[in-house]
Image (cartoon, rainbow, N blue to C red):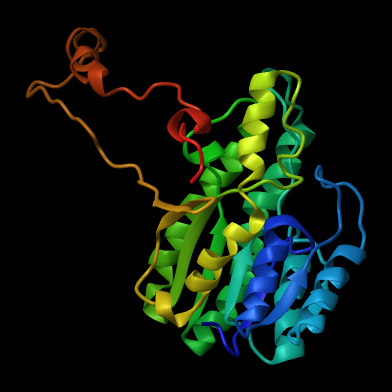
Length: 301
């Protein structure tokens, strides 16, 4: 479905990114495998992971080149996109998958923990998308696939930095879809459920935790790849500005914020009438403090 296309996948040295890169190549794409080879918290640099995935693609008869530039800096991110153009002459799709975790309860979170996660996920998605946008506009075509998360779309404990970045990515994707529609450029999000090193630190101290992790481990990264390939393909030309989740063999379309209830007073509002009238009228439609696991409460299919 992506035969002959040039696809850039960030964070493709392992986990979800690796499987997306392999799937793109198996469907005929020429792939830029980007990964700085850092630890989960973003520390370190190793060219090995990207090269290993490239070697896997070559062994399968595909075309790929490695890249180890960081997405978290504008100039560096531009080099990743330029790598595709330099090696393959063009760029047709990007998958913004690179990410790190620095989980901490909000009242304990440091500025560095906040900043580093925002830089990779939100700034990184912007920097790579912005660099690709110039080429997409000139060629009047292009597809962007961004990884968001139910941590931001719904909620989770101890991930204010990650959740804020991932909800920001969803808004970024929608804005790109609106701004670049006239240039035939599409932008969509995937919220993946998959076992990878990004969530490998979930505790297994209790039987309940062990059962939960066992269920998550069923959801392999390879389950995410087919949707990413589809969204990068011409078959998805009518799909734009959407958010999907992939949970093992389930694909869901995720809702986007819209008004659910409203109330008015012709004379306007005061703090007292808001307390006495508006809030009681709307309280039945308040959202609970759900976490992702509360909404996706059933076993993965």
